[in-house]
Amino acid sequence: MSVAFTVAALYKFVPLPDFKEIQGSLQAACDDAGVMGTILLASEGINGTIAGPQAKIDAVLAWISNHESIGPIEAKFSLAHDQPFLRMKVRLKKEIVTLGAGRVDPNEQVGTYVDPQDWNELIDQDDIILIDTRNDYEVAIGTFQNAQNPKTTSFREFPDFIEKLKKDLPEDKKPRVAMFCTGGIRCEKASSFMLREGFDEVFHLKGGILKYLEKVPEAETKWQGDCFVFDNRVSVRHGLEVGDYDLCHACRMPISVKDKKSEDYRPGVSCPHCIGTRSMEDIARFEERQKQMELAKARGEQHIGAAAHKDKA
Image 1 (cartoon, rainbow, N blue to C red):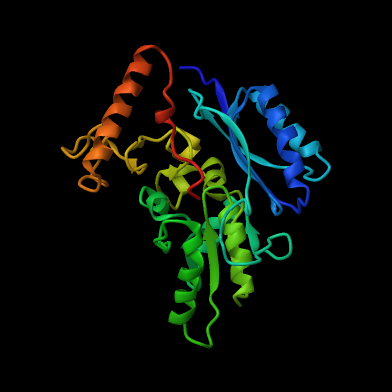
Image 2: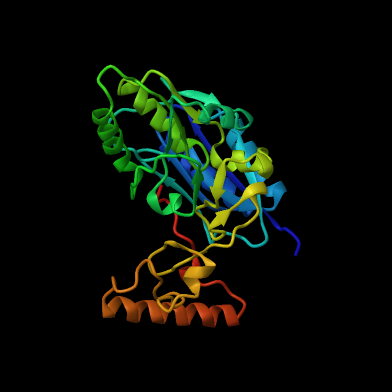
């Protein structure tokens, strides 16, 4: 099967006092190029993932990089056989990744970036505390060896995890901390937050897990499992190949091949993660949605209910 779509994950912390004025022209640029996905704009910068033919992606990235308020932007690329998004939306937000901990600005201070090829050496050091800054459902399908799981359901809970971590440490000890996330944006903001909270040595994986899986040979990996992504691919593995996970369209949790063999799994209605948690009204609604999805598939169309969930970062 030929690969038709390039998926570009991008973000940049940059002061954007005019972010509301950028929305319309950026939406138009994306629409003109025919790409799909979501881009967030806030006063602290830009964050998003878009997909389309390579030339169309290049056109949008060039528009962003040439905008006087944003400037050059890097992106992480992967491939998809099918368009992983259903629409294109440029949205305005208070934060491009929501921490909700007051003023935390990576434009002012940020941790030390670590290139993927140097990551293994860093996290092998005995005095490093390794923290996965992603949410619990993401960690569940893959993470680095010996990483701490904050067990958060949203990034807003991360400050509470750090507060508990500080209380559990000896008063005279300030550990060296290494953090990682999917594409780099969450741990970049988390590193700024931790410096504000008094940690002296904070490191984070440049380009995130996606760049590590792209650059580090599988034979040398310290990564275990798949990496959850916020589109219809659901997960990727080394070389950024699409993984084996699907998505439960009832609870939006990633589900494995084993999960789909469970008696608790009904496509679009329930899975082992959410069985018994929904009302009869919800179940009836899910059954009808699944029926409409199957009818759309038979017509060669894609039903909106099939879209993977987004913006849960």
